[in-house]
Amino acid sequence: MNHATEVFQPLQADDPLLVGGYRLAARLGAGGMGRVYLSHTQGGRPVAIKVVRPELADDPDFRRRFRREVEAARRVRGAYTAELIDADADGVPPWLATLYVPGPSLAEAVARRGPLPVPAVLWLVAGVAEALQAIHGAGIVHRDLKPSNVLLAADGPRVIDFGISLASDATSHTATGSAVGTPSFMAPEQASAGEITAATDVFALGQTAAFAALGRPLYGDGPSVSVLYRIVHSAPDLSLLPEQLRPLLSRCLAADPEERATLSEIVAWCRQRLGGDADAGAGPAVWREVMGPQVTVPSPVPDPTPVHTLPLVARPRSAWSPPVRPLPAGPDERRARRRRTALVTAAVVTTGALLLTGLTWSVRNAADRFSDWAADASSTPGPATPTPSSGSTRSSESARSSGSGPESPSASTPKSGSGGRTPEASRPSATAPTAPQATPYPVLWLDEKNSLSIKEPVRRKDRKGDIRFVCGEHSCALESDTSVITLLYSKPGATLDSCRLALTGADSRRLPLAAAAAGSEICVKHPSGDIALFVIQVKSTALPKAGISFVTGEMTVWRAG
Image 1 (tube, rainbow, N blue to C red):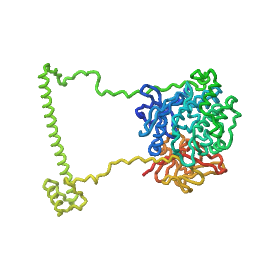
Image 2: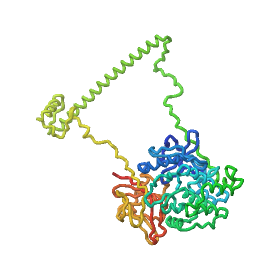
Image 3: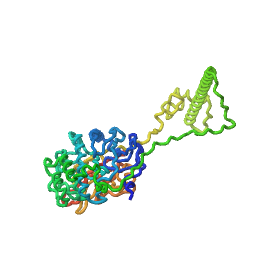
Image 4: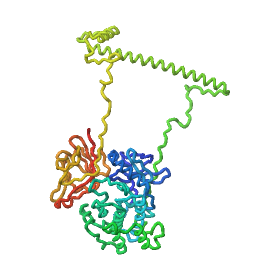
């Protein structure tokens, strides 16, 4: 199987070819923040370019957060991190570039081959712990460490994606009472919206290691609210883990952040268990086995070849071609020839200007006369309209100027400063309609007590909005009395055009959520013509009878006018 075809997707019609001077070679994926592309530095080193979604880029608050997080990420330097090498927070749209890691994520490796052997888990934990040391040393708490954010390179793991990380001294930008991160890998204090510290990442490291050893999340699957409840109120069951790993993971997963192991202790513990292999550099052969086959990275995209508009080979002269005169041998002859050429050129330019002026005057005079004749013809009643002439034109001009003729200044024919021509204000506008403006709403909670409106205000504490969350005995759905709702089944990264296409011919105002999951995209069309894109972040619909069902997400609305 060619893993390259799974990793590198060809660029689509709506993908840019160039971002910040980087030529894009392939599409790597998409997420809530935007799309990720493969590119190369000038020296040919592969990089991952993350381009922010346009609707997010239009949000001033998002731009401020993005700029702050880029500046924080620039400070991170570590052997086991994918370093940020370039970014433009003020770009249109904003983007950032990190070193590309040619290897699968931990989540992909486990899905392909199952749980990792103990030596590979030890190498994984030691490398990720060193990466977190570099991240914390720059004053950053990752907040979203999980298997998909750990890439497996030939020389060890790489921790990526500081997209929702914040400087540890910065104020959280989330809504009151909401948590940032992935539910299955959160720490208890994170799930309960408590204080976030470096120990929060240690708990996530313990969960990530347990996932690698078990092949599934330590706290189980199911609705997010149920997983979070177990994380906050239950001790983890370590009995299914390999015995060699239990002491370390028990320390990492302590409920009290003060009792968790430090990153230095974790690195030392792993190196002690690895023994002599700890000094091997790239790890044992089992680590390379976990990575799977090497992926061939596509070559850099070459610069466009300039198109030559003139032939490179001289063509034979035809019979009508003027003779080629040799350059005069002496300097005096060359100066004399340059003077003659300058005089001839000036004469030609002057003659051309006079001819153009005369032609322009003639055309404008003819246009004025025709306009006056048309005005006279339209104002003269009856079939016996006289043939236009210079005399009749002047007579009608005199009559209009004195106000005594059949047309006065108040008549329908507009008066202007040149022969009664139509003024600019009366001409039809050629301005093209502007594109709908996208308005983002990043953090939205929808349950059976509130609703969402397409028009402002979007958040409603009653059930009178355009989109409502409803649950029956066995399932939940989104429904509306006003708007058409449809679920997209294409790859992530929907746009206004893809929503318009999906809504063409759609007429359903109810969408069951059984087939939806985190990352699912839902298009909504309001009778006013406004179109909304709702992207699910968390869906909890497994226990509708318990009254704790809800859905969270972000919504972008394109206003029709």
